[in-house]
Length: 305
Image (cartoon, rainbow, N blue to C red; front, side, top):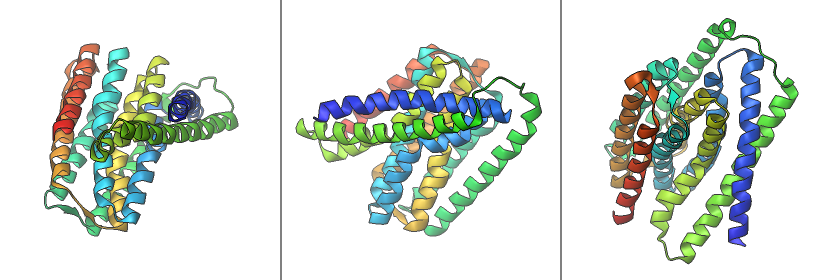
């Protein structure tokens, strides 16, 4: 039964992502704003719903180490695997706004997070500061979207109600399918004798990032690399500023020493991705393969840690 539910989960993820991307792209055309803005906001927040659910519920239950490790693990996966696989499928040019604004912001807030957790905790005040940072980031996105409305040509799009229906139904299928994959993959792993710690650091973190992965792959195959890259980077920013900010505001987070090391790895991966995107203003298939191999190396390190 676990294998059957696992397959159903993957089907829901793939078909849900297809509808989600189609609806999001149509909404961008309807609003006359670049799809990358939609990717950095609506799509990024929607695909981060599993991370939000896991981390905020963990904070409410007092399982602070899960709240932090889930976010850090998911962000490493987003940067190395989501972007890496999309680049390997089809090398893409880097959106200039993501390169100048969002990737540096991603590195900056990861560095701030590293400084915050170096003393072994994220206080309630620090959580509130992260939430304030999220508000400023969203306001900046809205301002840029309004500026660029006149730059986007008017294109034929599906009706607004249908685009919204695609977004809502697609997101619901993606989240439900992701939960099916995480729960049943965990049960299968347990049956093979894999430790709960390893499952938490890999299957749960990867599982909650499956919406970003599948959505970005679908967007890339549809030729919308701006939405794909915006989704991955936007999700990472949202995960740190909103999800960790909200979790710490609910209950101050106590950090495991391993999470400090993982955050350092996350910072290095963010810088690596920026370097790849900056050179030739694109991410090549070879660079995508390097990102994916780096994640495999990180998983091997978790296995022996």
